[in-house]
Image (cartoon, rainbow, N blue to C red; front, side, top):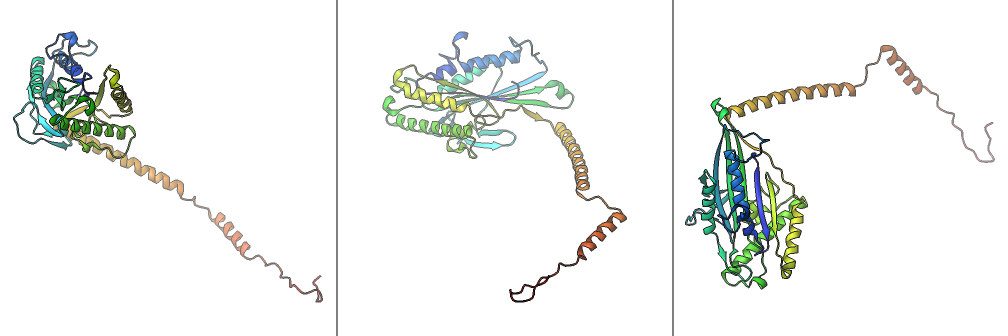
Length: 352
């Protein structure tokens, strides 16, 4: 809502409660039992409608909001549009300076209320890939990524002929859980899904390690999951990680691994900034101001160079000083050489 990008990631072992934490028991649960996603929807539309918001921040009635949402899953390293499950178009990940990283061909639905938000979310969850395993009756077999784009436009500036827009993006990620085949007893198709899930989570761990150690190369392209979440991992985003853990003693190793992953992510540093969209008039004014600043900087650099050259060059000497220096040099050149002494043997003459 402030023009920043935000991401919430749910990470943990299969059956540890990631989907329950994100969605709640159901999307229609009472207020006290709602998950993170329904609570986020409630907070967003309360702010837009000016209901129950912090009184210290005045509500701006002259702001127009435009909300669009999309829902996709990463299933066996393939991107699927959950809002258009019958769409056979192959989704591709692209990057543009204006939009950053996005999924080309992904359908985006306009929404105007919390009810529409939950309706779109529920429709996407029905199309998500799930299966039954020994550890979970409704195990998620894909990584679900729900994206909400919020555009804010000032009507007052638009009436004056200008435009001031802030763009924010909220990404809610419900990752599939890591699992050991010996415990989940997956076979056939479910086994192949488990392999791809563990593959993408391993790639996510490598990205976190590279960012935490500040390596020159970060392997975002090793997986579709890390490529889609590139901005959330060390980029222009405010990211929150939710780690779920099982209370069972038999899952001690998986719980310890999840906690170590969380400890490594605390060393990752993102660089979040407010996303503005400027009109052509505003961009022209910014160009003129930058040209003025550049001209002023060039003049200042010239003055500094002239002052530096003046300090380096020797001071001019007077004629008398130059004559004294020349006279001293001539005297040093006219000094008489020392007398030479001839060496003789003991029987020869000696110089007294």
